[in-house]
Image 1 (cartoon, rainbow, N blue to C red):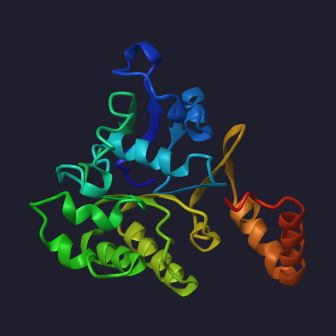
Image 2 (image 1 turned 45 degrees about the horizontal axis):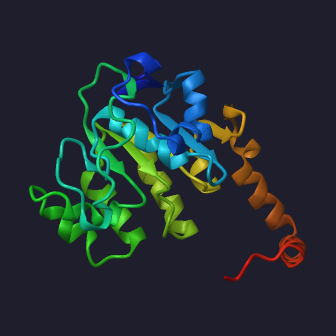
Length: 253
């Protein structure tokens, strides 16, 4: 196995923490799972999947903060003030609460945070090149531009739902780019709903469920099974879902 940047992620014992986790973070399934058992990151490629509200993005943020990345994302080592779009975020609740077991490699890389990726240039006066790369582009285009410019074989890359804004074909292209980086020494950890990305050859896949984190395979993931069922009978699935919503309509107000 090649040398890695990080080998596992864990939470400190409560008496060793700088602070208590807020209730919203402490009760997320992904964080509850790591409270019980550290998350192994022994593979160069780790995917974290699961339904909405399971805590995929929160877990990626916690890993990123533990590694020393800025809470809002961007290249490793850059520091800055919160952008006007995220000025109320402050310090991550996982600062001083979570940590990683580091591998032997010196930390380099990029944290691509879905919610604030496009705002990263507002945070870092010492990275003016980010402005030209990310501004004036669609979310999907800016993701691919950041990867082209900042991702290299000697880095750890944390990606939070990078498929957002990408067509199926572009997701395949993204997977190919990430595969090429891993083949040359990079390590990637990705939170995703995309069955396309989950098909990455040789990847370790963890699915978050209410009971915790479960190691699984592509075909056993909820994302893959849901899409497979839809493709097998698209009209039947559509009618079923419409009937379900019709029986239990949401409150339009």
